[in-house]
Amino acid sequence: MDTITHGIAGALLGKALFGGDDLLVPKAAERGPRMTASRIVTAAATLGAVFPDADIVRDVLSRNDLLILTWHRSVTHSFLCLPAFAFGFAWVTQWLARKFKWECPSFAQLALVYAVGLGSHIFLDLLNSFGTMVWSPLEWTRPAWDLIFIIDFTLTALLLLPQSLARLYEQGEKLAQRALRLWLLYSVAAIVVAGLLQIAGYPLSVASVIGVIAALAAFIFLPILRDWGSRLSRAEWCRAGLAAAVLYIAAAGIAHHAALNRVKQFALLERLEVESLAAMPLPPSLWHWDGLIRTSRGVYELRMNLAQRAAAGASPEAAIEYGYYPDALDNPFIEEARQLPQVKTVLWFARFPVTRFRRDAEASIVEIVDLRFLTARSGQRPAFTYRVRFDGSGRVLSLGWARR
Image (cartoon, rainbow, N blue to C red; front, side, top):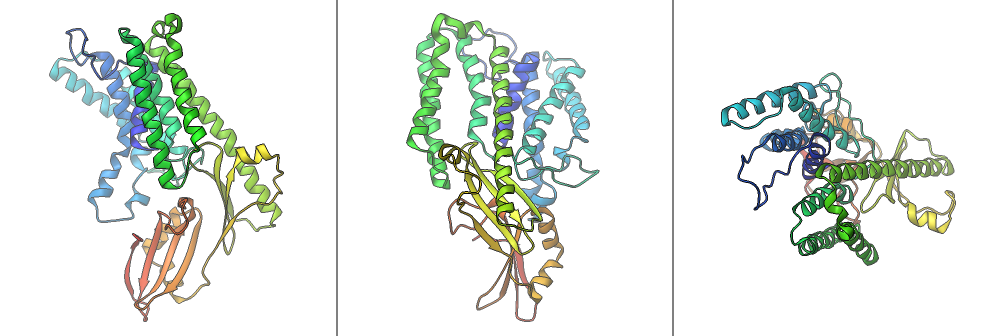
């Protein structure tokens, strides 16, 4: 999950579960301390929710381009290390509060808030396909539940919109005017997101974009009726958002189960000797999935739109479009590449690796491609493609992630 969404989720949890206040102080706010105990709660939940991604700093500063596999989502994303981080942050927060004379929650409450924020990050990262080393440093495996795409704009909106509505209806004055501005802001954001998805090769239909904008209008304007939106507290708005996010994740689980069943049925239909298989989430919605099946000689890949199949009433045995990515035949260069420590690390990480081999005028080239990260547009190289170049005598000329 992207770091921004993690921060939004942390803020929502702080407000929904611990009575946190908005970090942005309204213009008409009372002339009191800017850092109150309730704002510290929200800040702590938000910081806890974004902190695990601080491990990316080491990736950026280091020249080791494999840290994204061996270090990212390890210790800072570990359930085993979570208590130490929660207690450490709580101690630092209380120290700062004493130093600057802020109102501050108790140490126990702070530790709990930080733990919930940290736990939310670890949980949300488990939902996607990248893998998270939740038991490090005791165990360095990468569990991945394959339920949510790594950037999911719907989930982000479900986490953010209730906080915006709580702030909108809390202030009261010029409600219709501010509601219109909020709706326009979210509508423009929806159009921008649709454009980004179009560029990435995962287009949204015009009807879908109009439906999203209409749904936003309903969520924002309907609570004005009989002023019931103003009668809900901030915590109630945020609990509603938390419940919506939980239901969305549950729906993703149901869709994943259906997609995985279709992948299994395809493997049976084709009588494949399966080594491993999975259904990976794809944007732009929970209907879209990518099925991957690893066999001894290569990987089968099939794109699924559950909505189209359901609407057509087609059976799982109906004609399915799929791709096949065979491994290159073994040769001395491939064997030599597999013995390199860097390639062993890549193969440890890759769940659906495919080995490719080619020659050019200067070198023999071995590539390891992880098909979890296929792009939507044909001809584009998958994000995780590791390349080793050999000269004619088998000496390594270069190795690293393929940039083009």
